[in-house]
Length: 202
Image (cartoon, rainbow, N blue to C red; front, side, top):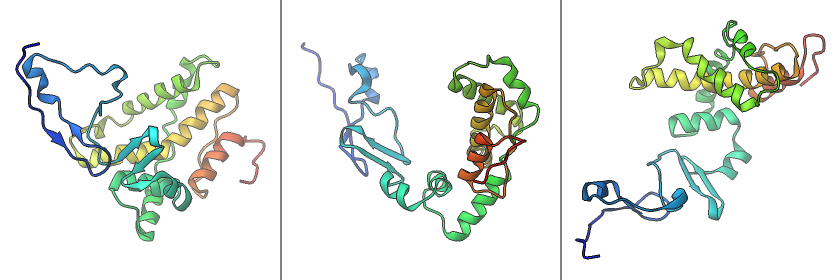
């Protein structure tokens, strides 16, 4: 009451409502009150737009329904990383690069022994994904574009392997190695549900 008015800039996004930029508000000694951040965008994103109330999810401007129907998982990964859907040649190269990184270091298997067998899968997953940095300490400079790219590709490639390892550990079954002759989805199913004594057709 009686406080001086504050002028705040309005930003216009490529999609969705305009946004009031409140970053300069702290200089006035004031803060916003927005329980649950229902009216707050936490960051500027060139990758994803979400409007949960209206059921809208866009990745790089493409509706998620279109990507689900017309693109596969690795095409969508390429889109998220590079801003455009790949050409046939770009996709083929990307698939080869991803397949070259599906294996995890053998020593990582021993990391699982630190978890109870009945531990929540997401807790185990968080632990083993974090442990990957111990094996790739030479490429962790987030200011280096090449380091960011190889780290992203390694995560895309290794997540199915790690998820399957978490599942196998909880079941007390041997962990299955990835097979690079299979597609991304087929490989995940192979590592999840096959055992050394019974290889089912995928």
